Image 1 (cartoon, rainbow, N blue to C red):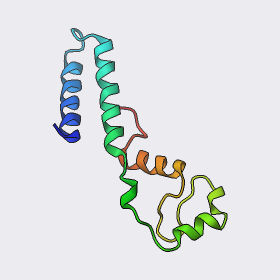
Image 2: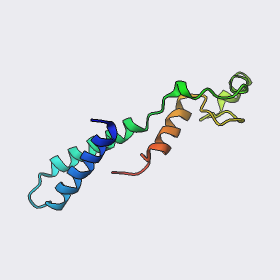
Image 3: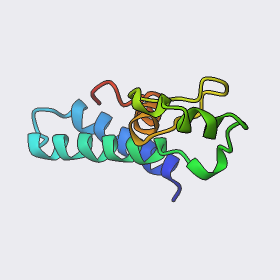
Image 4: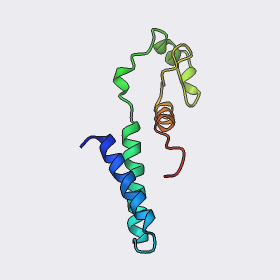
Length: 99
């Protein structure tokens, strides 16, 4: 099963549980919501090694721009620190909103 299939499966489970609210255990519904959120977060993780960046990325890090949080390359937009990577992953994954 791929991550996309697992997400679709959890979405269907949540939809079903919400349709039978009176008979479904509230803790079970909450557990499915959290597992769906975790799967979406996992799917949003980027392969950081694939983003090579531009020749100026290193220059931006060395010239003091790393002090700005979060820091991105001013030329190509590559995240230059952990906070910037986390923000980008959160935006791409749509994890700013509740499930």
